[in-house]
Length: 103
Image 1 (tube, helix red, strand yellow):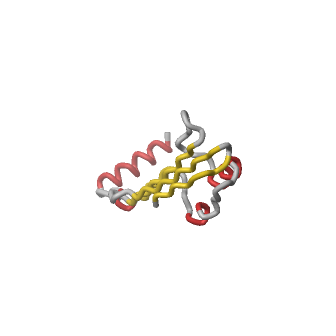
Image 2 (cartoon, one colour):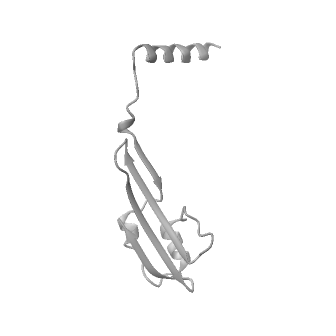
Image 3 (tube, rainbow, N blue to C red):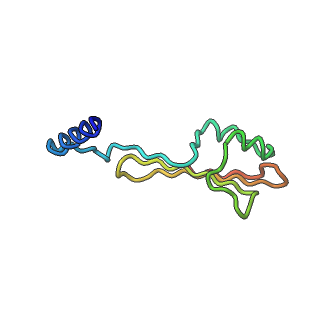
């Protein structure tokens, strides 16, 4: 009961003093991190397993085409314009055959 009273007092204090959180300073990050150093380690001809160990699981799971892995990273500060990075890996016979990177 005492804990509830403390939270109520804090909420009332913040409301009455017009304290607000500035959402324009928030950083929003979603998806797979795509560091340049990791992408540079990808090599045509490497196995699907090695590419998976290096890049991690694709958050866009390959439902219909397991020969294409898509990685997406989105970053935005507050209400600013989002920065979007895409990486697509193509496999042929279990080997990396093509890399498309859109920074």
